[in-house]
Length: 80
Length: 80
Length: 80
Length: 80
Image (cartoon, rainbow over all chains, first blue to last red):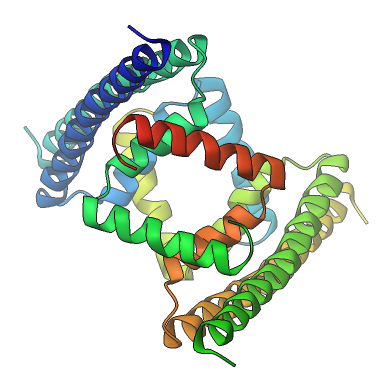
């Protein structure tokens, strides 16, 4: 197979592999949206839920230090 | 189960369902990175590959119209 | 001036006006980075500072409601 | 001034300096939106205009190389 013909096949193969994986990712994103919609239906606040999911990704010590610092700064500014 | 105890379980269940789905999504993102790394290893330009994947998502007529307009504007500015 | 020649001038004028405004915006972004760098030099935590700036953009009632809800959810999950 | 009182003033000063700069940035963003709205009013395609502004930020050699590679890949996939 001529070099450029070989490259075309490899190019198409890479592009199509990425596209299949991105489709699977899109399906998971839709599933996540469904979970949040279900939670909203039961009265949960989706914005806060998303924030909780983000915070749970933090290492515990980092989380506690961030909480303490934020509390210090917000109190210093009269926001808490 | 007292209402608040029931809410706690539902909250935890929603959070953990989202976390499992996000883990699956992360695994797919890693797979996509691997495909691009493999393509790079074979001499393909990853930035251009990503752009091609983005462009292939466009409806064909939109893609062609965008190409024509971009050509018109870039030529008018002496960039093509 | 032929229509297309007229369009070229208008196109260039719009592009250059946007570019000048974006340059000014870039300068302000650099100024903001300098303020954070100065704060860091005095021992402040830049990540928390950025979070405080974001929170201060919120309407007071929204801020307090968000804080209360987050506290409720985090406590329910044993994170506070 | 007790150390913590000193810190409060410094904290407030940094936050307020950032806020003033962010306000100026917001005003410039609004100006940019106005230029694009004006261009749209004269029949220009704003999405393409934004793309042109982005491409003009590229170094000329990079821009030409990117164009050539994209052309090669899109042609190989039958999109050009």
